[in-house]
Image (tube, rainbow over all chains, first blue to last red; front, side):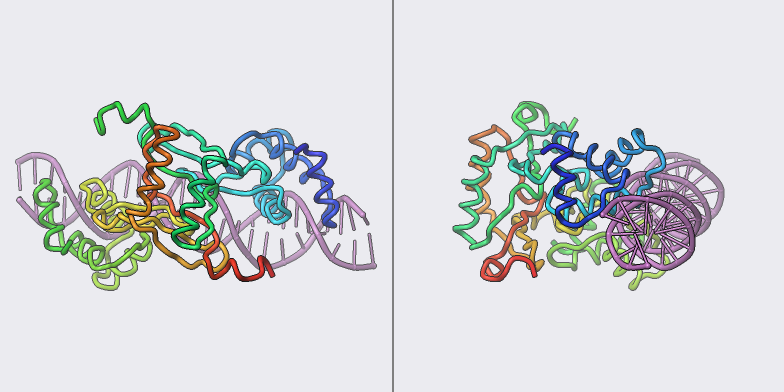
Length: 143
Length: 143
DNA sequence: GTCGTTGCAAAGCGTTTGCAACTAT
DNA sequence: ATAGTTGCAAACGCTTTGCAACGAC
């Protein structure tokens, strides 16, 4: 989604369009993949000095409320991503830190399995899945 | 595992047995399920006032290093559990907060699936799986 | 003019660190 | 005696809060 479209979403919800908000939305919509709040703050402040952390955090909350952003829990904490792009599962290697993804197609068969067993409808995109990547499996375990 | 056994493990590793460490190990080994660091601190300090957070955190690190404890990432952050009891996957409902588990048997079929697709060997116990529990699926979504 | 939004400054929370003193071995 | 361990106090990083001023509508 483009920043301009995102701004329309906000407008449609009756929310006001301030320069700060524009800068934050632009920066967030431009970023690919996932990004955490401090990183967003850094980028926004680079483009518009004087924007405070409180504004950033409050705006991120708003963007999540209106459905533009979502967050996932990765190894190093919460990270934001475009709500429309939540369609992948994060695989993070506990040894080397490498990140890989599972497509939603692949993830769906997993979700169906859980569904069947528990009647629990999982959202595998919300938390990462930790493990050992194929490369690290061929290496010694610890040191 | 009993606290006495845990203490032996530490001894075997050449680590020293201080009263603080005994209190922490006792409290940790007595707790069932998962528990976070501040809660451990509260319990230990109730039993032995004066034990500082730094000691608690450092000791938890030690216990994890020697393989007595592990931690998982649940919705509200990291939680510790006995390393021997890591054999279940946490399912946390994003609507009502209810927690359920998946047995390792059930989880293994999931893990095999990921393995097959990606050569990535997942540890589904490390992160929780978020979703909507069966009870909440019958309820209205938001308000 | 209203009320959503911002900056500021401070506090909150969980966690980590450096260092000197202590103590289990 | 040696080295692991502790308490202290401070700092850390990220996030949240109250409040008065601002500004989009």
